[in-house]
Length: 130
Image (cartoon, rainbow, N blue to C red; front, side, top):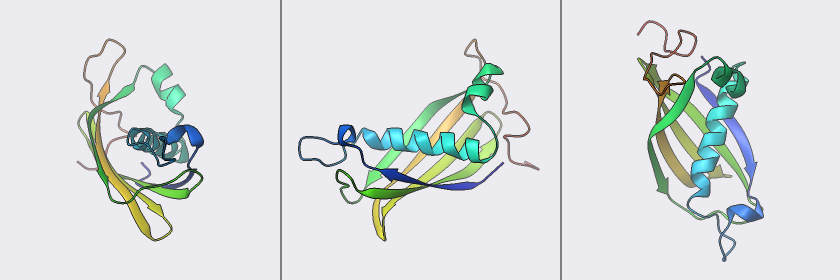
């Protein structure tokens, strides 16, 4: 499993509030995009994963805001897989504008099947040797 991925995000107008600052809820969407693109970079389409009956649902999400981001800023999101064991994957996120730290976050996603039952991560997705 690929451990880390970097992605550039251009702040879109619809991600902003009346002051043209990124709305706090948009950061959750940025993190989801980071997770999806990390999987894609590792050679796995989220669409294909779901078609195989595996679903990754958010169990925990944390966002820590440091500086505001504005409309049309170019941001760099680093998504890191911290741990993938059992039925859970923990990710860490760092969002920067150049050298400025904009936000940090963490998610835990749980693996479930199409009926909503918790299941172990497939071997290709879990940490090796744990």
